[in-house]
Amino acid sequence: MMFEIRTTKFLLEQVKDYDEKTKRIIFDKKELLKINPFRYKKVNTESYSHVFSIKLSHKAEAKRLVYIVLGNIVFLCFILDRSRGYKDLERYFRRIEKELR
Image (cartoon, rainbow, N blue to C red; front, side, top):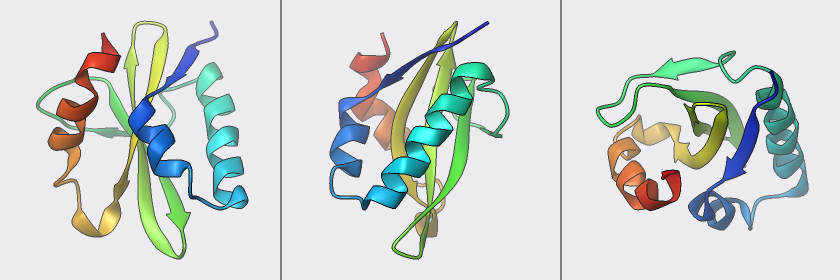
């Protein structure tokens, strides 16, 4: 089964200033998610049950691309700064909640 990939507007805002190498890595990960979105680390949240993260690096900073699986749709949600842990996770989910419906 192939999964449909959707990207939130918030994520597009975040990556618009990223370098081409990082954008290419995100695109490659997106292609892998179409086949198997359950391959990466599961993240525990209060809001959703099927949330996962992918390790990324941008300008030598550790980042996480957070996505959620809802049925056969994978929403690429946002990028978290790993230095802050997952403190912004719930706040970011509230910001994109309308797009996930």
